[in-house]
Image 1: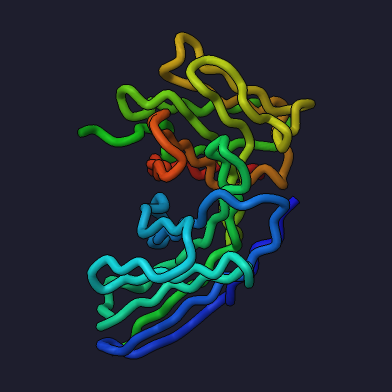
Image 2: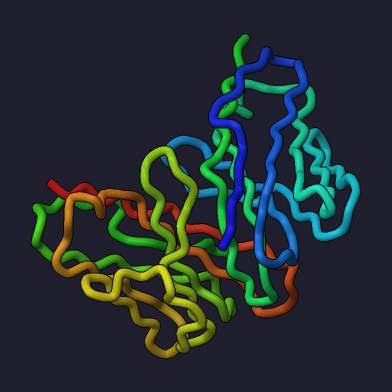
Length: 110
Length: 115
């Protein structure tokens, strides 16, 4: 089984930084993904971590600590278009199946 | 490169009726997934195909849901009969069979409302 927790909502100001935390308890671990989902649209891939440490991709960075069962997604220089739901997903085994958290809705205000 | 295609985009039915959704994955992608996403929740995997074989259907309510992927390309998901709690967005996703870091590519989804 799996238990993936992330905050329900976060609000930040345009140009600021927001950190979305994700904790997980799974029977196995074979990678953690972050997806972005705008309202009414399909999720789109943001990042993948399988080893401990920070992965940086432009304004977005993702961090993983396997020993702590913890990841975060860091969004820098927030823009209005970053208002969306951010989904944390864990792959437990080597069969490509993902288990998703409920998502964190980020609202960016001017 | 064309993305994952799904139809219809929206469907409204009454409880106890039947409904079917169609998905065409990205060309060459061996793995296809159907997810159910209830409002305010993350996607929940219903079934996973690899080519035309089922890899995982442990969370598929088999008394009312069925899915097939003939010829290892297109897939259909059927609900018969529908219940009120089936109201959700049904997402189809695909990924190539190349490595564990492969991301899943999602289609636009079908929003089902059961009245």
